[in-house]
Amino acid sequence: MPQAKTLPAAKGYDGPFSLFTHALPIIARVLVRLSCLATLKLALMLPFIRTPSYHSKVITPDFMTNVFRRKGILGGEERVETLRVEVMEMGAIGAVERIYITYSGLRPDSRPPATMIAKVLGTSVKDTIVGSLCPLSENEHRAYTHEVFTKKVKGLQPLVYHFDLSFYGVGLLLMEDLRELRHIKSRDGASLSDLTRVVELCAKIHSRTLNQVPRPMVQEFQFHTYLLDHISGTNANMALTGPWSECMRAHPRLAHTMELFLDYDNSDKLFVKMRGFGFRPTDSAALPKPFACLIHGDVRLDNCFFDDKTKTAKLVDWQVIMPRAPLLDIGWLLMDGSDETLSVPSTEVLCSLPLNAAPPQEEAEACRASVNVLLTAYLTTMSHELSQNTSYTGERPTMAYCQDMLPWLMLNDAFYMMVSVAQIFKCDPKTDMANPIVQTFLKYADRLEWLLRVFVPTLDFIQQSTV
Image 1 (cartoon, rainbow, N blue to C red):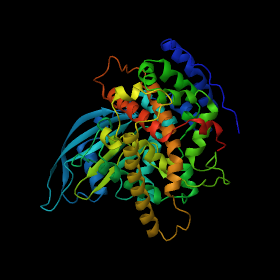
Image 2: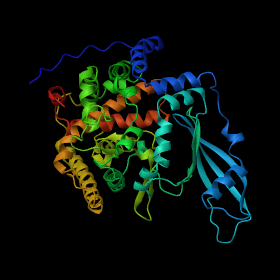
Image 3: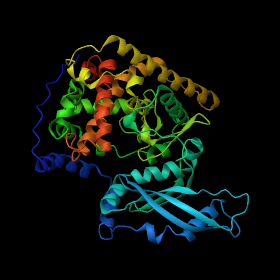
Image 4: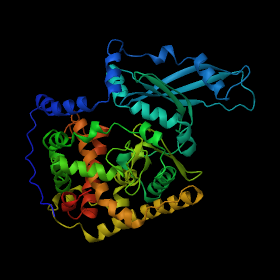
């Protein structure tokens, strides 16, 4: 049995220069592993890069009229008369806007949308570079326009009216406005019934490509994970010694788990487990071990909309869709459970527990019962979906598989929280308490500290694992 390795000591946070020196190894590794195509795109892009202006040049009444006519929504003399644009937020690779629309010449039976959502990709030089090299926009474009995939997930996504994307990561997505549906913020947490509805939605998505992802789809939807696979040590330093260090270290089990990722071997084992197949998914010898499918990759309440009339839900933001182990989506969603749903003790109680102390028994049992309800709903829905798929003859996930994966899912949550905290180091939890991002991650810290204590009694298994 392999011996546990001694973890290297974390380096101190010395401000922006320290962050720059920490980033140098990341930059070097990314440049080495960037594909020839991505490098070519960057070289071709730099001389011409500029901030696009979709607002005035593209989104016009005539443009929108043509979009609706191609979709069969408008006909004859019907046309878009006026547009009013309201900027909602600035996302990772562009702006999200709501467009208010008025029409002229409508027939009595016409019901075109009064509003729609516009996602303007590449609204700055940074957005364009990120969108071109790290294919968030490409992934989302495929998720909404790929003929095979959109048929498989019909009804689980918003309706898309138009999606245009350029070689340089500049584009425009026009889609259904889901504001009539109920929406919950991740920081507020969800009830068990709402979480159940989301895991049932995930089961439908996963079952339709479970161990049957066509090779071209695997290659097309393969997110460039090398941008994440080699940043664990640096992000552990940032998360544990930067502005968020006091918050992270106040949660003993969470901080200890993050320290594990100072050792690259541990993060590599985690990545292999989460992939669900061989280390290189484009290799013809890569086989599911034991399950793989296309996952959404960012299943959070912030991306979920609930239709209480039909008892269903829809997911937006398909930017990191990728072939992975199916339960990865469920693991991240667990952090969106409310304190009541997960029976999370108060922050004071959580942070006062010694590192190796067992969680309070009554609350831990209640948490396990809630998670068991979610996993049962997930497996039941997946079994029903697979029974409708006459071409699927392979094995199906079982409760034993889910229970085996739970500790790894908690480690995966800790890793990506560490990555996220490192990326938002400019948000100081001491001074930015009103910032929604800070509020969300403070809640995540409490919930993940609790989930780690309940489902990961010891961390020895990752160092002893041979996956």
